[in-house]
Image (cartoon, rainbow, N blue to C red; front, top):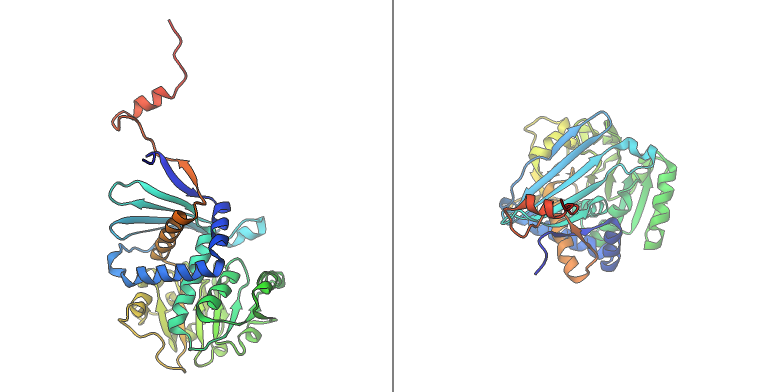
Length: 350
């Protein structure tokens, strides 16, 4: 019988070992499958916009959900200025728990896992929203998320060519160098306009916490799919609103995206389609080859739930984890104080 004080813990080191054991692209495909399964049972989940604490420097968020049997949450931050101090813009960890007992069954790093699940979600959406046969993607913003997006789009859509642009040429060179081994045809571009030329899909994944026009309306041609990833909090957007007004817009959870996504620029009743309805066959995705489509991705807790349950299942096959002494487990559940006393120094004899 497993000790009741122990919870499996996946450190960053063990997460990296797990990813390489499964294979990066194989794991992206598996995550996309889990997200599709969970979105297809959307109504089983408790849903709420994430709980956010905003500051001038960034945001700290909790992202909870439950399907009635299992509960999951993620702690995540977004602090764009961190890079100047040698820190990650985004860090995260997550917990999966049994609803019946309330006991956690998994604690894991989620900085890497969030990057993987975000990319898997993007590519899953694009399978339904991009034109069939799309092979070229522009990546605007070449920071920490860029390579994950590229590999997910190759694994799920067959993307072969990448056109990279970042306002920091060093970021583009980093991205080009990291992806060189994977067989993409890669072009480093001097401007956003140059990058989107000839692209079937444009992914914007920038970090600045401000309303910005990373992608102007004049750069989006008919039939293009825009995967807008960087806008993920109030006052932070990447697309010119004119793009949205002539596109089919798809979101994860509408109440959250109204607050945080590109559509915060539009009227509160502007029509959008939740992705789960497309995945479950209740709504169409792309309607024709000429339509412009936008996936207004801000990230949603069900995606993290899918990632957490995927990791837990993989640990049964590949035990890359440590046992974390996290929960008090007294011999008598009513005698928590007695457990504390027995752990103290021995009493001196009178």
